[in-house]
Amino acid sequence: MTGSGVRVVIADDEPLIRAGIRLILTSDPGIEVVAEAPDGRAAIELTRAHAPDVVLLDIQMPVMDGLTALAELRRTAPGIPVIILTTFGERDNVLRALESGGAGFLLKDTAPAELIGAVRAAAAGEAYLSPAATRHVVDQLASGRAAARGGAARARVDRLSDREHEVLALLGEGLSNADTGRRLHMSEATVKTYVSRILAKLECENRVQAALLARDAGLGT
Figure 1 (cartoon, rainbow, N blue to C red):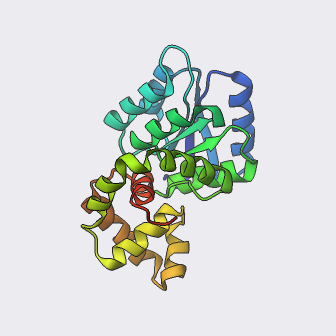
Figure 2: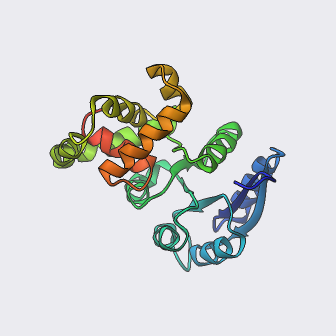
């Protein structure tokens, strides 16, 4: 994140959606929308040109869809978190997006304060899984694949220490580093250290992948 605040690229093929998101985000003086893209290909080009702190990416777009654009952004700009914009009807695509390295997802009818909070959380390196609506979607996705993947997930989680298990379980509940620290009576800096170790041991790219793995393994439920 730059000293001037959080810089955002918005990608959605509907001009009214983009305008609404821009209006909400720029109501926060610490957030700047640096570019808007009508499709996935333009999102990639604008991300390369502006190097934003966060990208908001719709799944269903012409020219190049959001999932294809996400895969390319993870390859060419892995340090920039990407939040997926979606609807309840796209849950399977959301799962694919999160497993591909998305930093979280937002429903398009998300309240303005939650949108701003999600962008700020992503810029700070945290997943956005805590609100009830998004947690419901993740729970549905995780429960649908638990039987097939639970055993493999538990085997991976067994690599962790008891304390790392506790931290991972709270990641699975969508807690931030600060909330995790309060729950486990640790400093936020210590939690960040544990999260880094967990991601390395589990070979997860980000907190969202770790949270989904925790759900598969039966932690945080």
